[in-house]
Length: 358
Image (cartoon, rainbow, N blue to C red; front, side):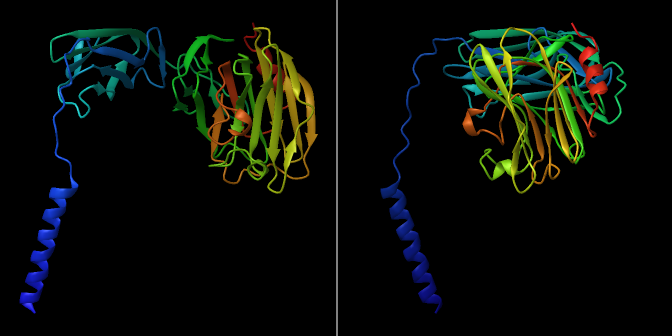
């Protein structure tokens, strides 16, 4: 028996050895050619001029940057305010390096971030970002208010000081009040819906519409993993826009678990470079839609909105859960986002509309 096992083992080794010789191509080194170009450095966060807002006067910051070369990187060096905080000389991908460097104790004030790269022939590139860190000012929330995103250079919720999630590479622009979120292709903001949505729920925000593309998602709490088809729309909420470069229709659709409900008619607004204030108040039996402080549409519900499986709030895109009908990312400006765990009143909406209104 031992002899038989030994014979089988020898045969297997022979077969494997033969397969290796016959089945694998030899490794042939390829000359990458001459190193003609210098490396390229890109700082993506914080970008130049950004205001970083945090809950504390001293706190961590995640620095995001990339360095690439046509042949091979030799080293990448990171300095903050003239002090070296990171040096890299070993790269898994020797042509491109894109780490996230956490600096643990950034103080309030002005800062200078510099990233430099050198290739194997000594050519180099360096980029600098001048940015400022500030502590979030005190904020007194309204009754039932659980999220306030002012987008003043960051994505911090001023109630509880929890950062919103960010997908893609949006930026900031002059807003209705200080800064505003500036949408970008394949970009949007997320926030977990747990503890926020319920039989009563409200949200309000300012928007300055960029009609290109002519349709986009605006505010979506959709079924996880869904696309927004007939079955998916029986759950959650979808606010979106579509139209032309001169006129935009805003539509609202919600699901009660057994069917979806349209809050018709659509709200039609001209595209005129003006800021517009939206507010939506939801109770178990009624949805009220406000534009610029006035009621423009109401809808009676025969059942409350069913939030089953709707774990993500997404702003400035239909993604990830309402991408049907091309309701993708919105390039518009968004500002002063407020979320509530109750159905806000017309008086509440007027308060939000009039605060610091320009």
